[in-house]
Length: 70
Image (cartoon, rainbow, N blue to C red; front, top):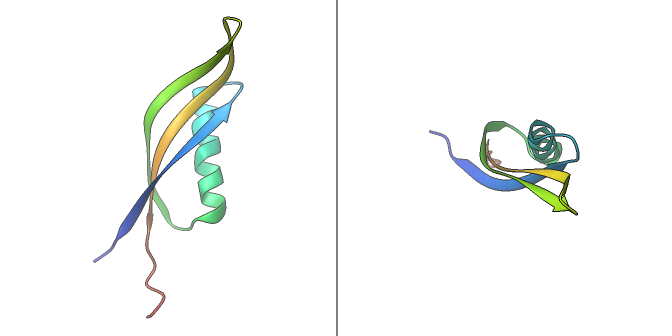
């Protein structure tokens, strides 16, 4: 039997939503192990003077709990 934790992270990029999602997953992967599933839950953009300045991707990421007592 396994147990998983789900966290929400937001990645940003000046280029694209895909790059923003990748940034979120890579940042989570730098401090967490055994990432399992990433789900994009929201995409939005930041505007300044009617210009797109930032793409943002909200990502739910699951990872497996480790049993350190074994």
